[in-house]
Amino acid sequence: MNDQGYTTSFEVDQTPQQAFDAINNVPLWWSGDLQGDTTEVGDEFTYRYEDLHRSRQRITEMTPQKRIVWHVVEAELNFVQNRAEWNGTDIIFDIATKGDKTEVRFTHAGLLPSAECFDDCSNAWSYYINGCLRNLIAGNVKGDRDAIG
Image (cartoon, rainbow, N blue to C red; front, side):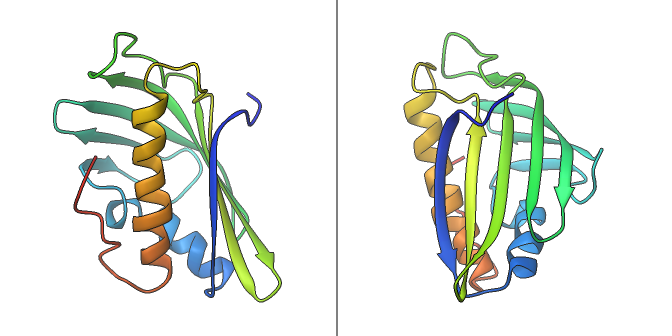
């Protein structure tokens, strides 16, 4: 799958390793019920938020300090007609050094503007990536993730 989809990014003062470690500590920044492992290629985890969202991700790529890819094996979004819109999409975290900063670039490949859930999902991703994950990497242990799922 190509990288076409929703993308956002941010920069932090922390190292690529600190960003990599925080991304892999999914329960600290993505609220809801998370079951399974999130630290090695081949790991699978299930994410559930109330009765609105359930998805199962498999880690398909993990390059320390550089890249993490989750493949959405199956998903059910109960707030849109096509509940399987996320099936087969990829969630990608690219980490790079930019001068004295670390950039985290997030892409949900396959989450296109034509998708029924695009507005709700891109708003939620923006909250989690630019808010919760960024705060976690910057040293806020909670990740400030207590609003939406």
